[in-house]
Length: 405
Image (cartoon, rainbow, N blue to C red; front, top):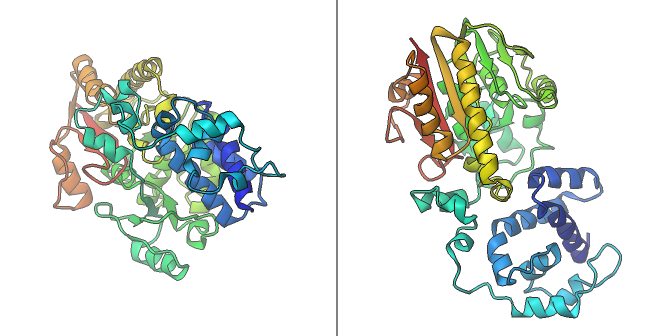
């Protein structure tokens, strides 16, 4: 693609993203899927530029004095280039910049005194939820590429990836994880296509291991989504036993089958109605704000509202109550979010325990050592586990296992 055509593609994608209706990764995937003629280098340039603009959205908008549009954002981002060549009006290129647009770009300054929300690239009402702003800074950084090995040895998968020219190191905590600091496209990676690895953040891998499932357990992944946890649990058990996967969205559940085929997973079964009350592991990967994944989805913070968060918290409490009814005595009710907000995490558990005195949190320090055989314990408490890019160099996750008396 010509340089100007790349800029036009970036503008087209940004136009959709700025509506704050759909996640940016879905918009990008759809854009490229409908334009398979775009080469891999061009795709990378377009995607990298879009994500970088999203991460700097507030600073760029502030510099433009609030005159936000996809054209102006792209114009300011590429201001050091010859904008007359990039915005030339030719076929597949952006239209020529108007006199007004040129004046706005000329006056723009990226070196002014920023307000707190502009500095942290986060709406103020969300900033107010952070006691430690270093965590917010960490959530604004770029994420690594983490994968878990599937039905194979980590060293074998690592060596095979190396032969494909892809260099991964072992994850610091997860014994089934590999990490790359580089942005990697796995669509043409044979190790991935053959099902030996699956994309999964290290915290999510660790949480799957901390569920401490056994083949004789009756296990349900209640908010299974597209089956990430279900497939990981099945891999940990080497297809021995059954993992029941449930979700209110049939569309999300339908993705499990295709993923399971690639991964050679046969022990995940779909369940549409949950009536049994004797689950040894009732696992709730609850719907949440997704604040812990802002490194990967920086656009998500602009789609979140106070009303949405209140609704999410209400749903989480209802799901916990449901899980309590269906957990076997002596079994574990496991609550997980990919959020860093207290109202979705600690407060949910505190409210739940006040209503359900027949449940008690287990000692997570002991669980960590027994399930992972790791001496290093990177958490300040044994009551809950709070993963974050600040403390564990992972996405932000919350984990709490409650035992039914």
